[in-house]
Image 1: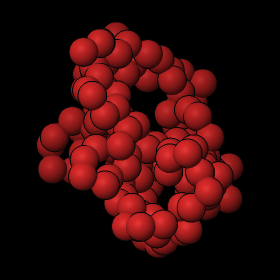
Image 2: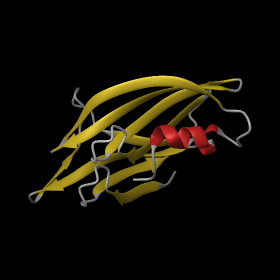
Image 3: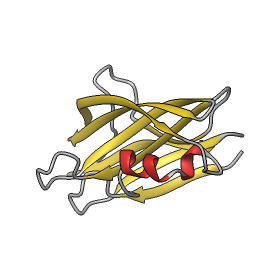
Length: 137
């Protein structure tokens, strides 16, 4: 299994966050870290667990993805984390939108839906998933 080390601006503030993690047989994931005023710290969810971003197809029929966009039209970038399953040709997904505030990931919106996943090599390459997750961060 490989290691993951990347930098990406997850909130559009012009400063990259650090993503550190690894790979599995079905995907790649990383915890998110920020450097603020000389302090490096993990970004955590409201329950205190690390914010982990995954892309992959976990068994038995799951999918995980994330992306960034201005989902609410405010001019600010939000982070979208998507979890889902595929049953036949139907992809069922749940998306949580986060704002990064200091070392916290504040979830402010959760929605869900379905789309027809037929016609794509896998659900991760389906154009509708791209609309749900936004663009690469």
